[in-house]
Amino acid sequence: MSTGRLKPRHQRFVEEYLIDFNATQAAIRAGYSAHTRYGDALLRKPGIAAAVNKELAAREEKARITGDRVLIEYGRMAFANMRDFAEWGAKGLILREKSELTEAEAAAIAEIRPSDSNGKGGQIKLYDKKAALDALARHLGLFDPNARLGKHDQTVGGKDARQELRERIQKLMRKGGS
Image (cartoon, rainbow, N blue to C red; front, side):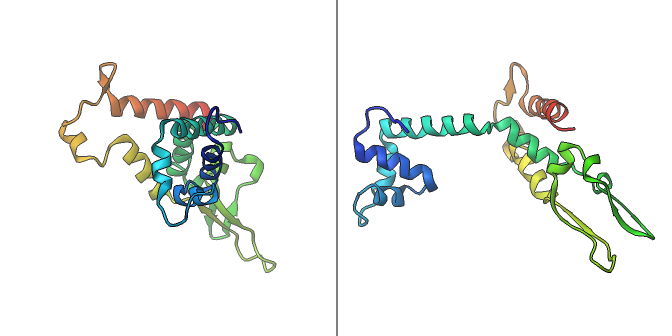
């Protein structure tokens, strides 16, 4: 990793900080005294902050992690429906074949337990739907009382920002999801 013209100990701090995002421990590992709380001060230095941001951006690019991708994954979890994965009735639970699942459906599965040796039914567990819905609602500002009261300017290009975001999420879900 090259962080430009940083002092060697500052460069080491950046490298250590990117391991666990713990500024205090990164400062200690970079050679600063354990008796000071120098980590936060180091993060406020413009050169160090720029180096951390540059490395994070490179990491995001390499891993292809974007806000859009995160929203798509939340949408997959939030809008998953158990009927898409299994049928149940008098004969018990019958899971769909893996090959029948879309990428979006497979991404919503947290755990699968196959039938036991006695033929006792398998189990399927989806990720926490409520947690995913709550995360999306917070992102959309649905829980912000000021947003409902109109106390913030929430427009994008003259359109309601929340509606614009909803439309973008739906577009992304159609494009990258099902």
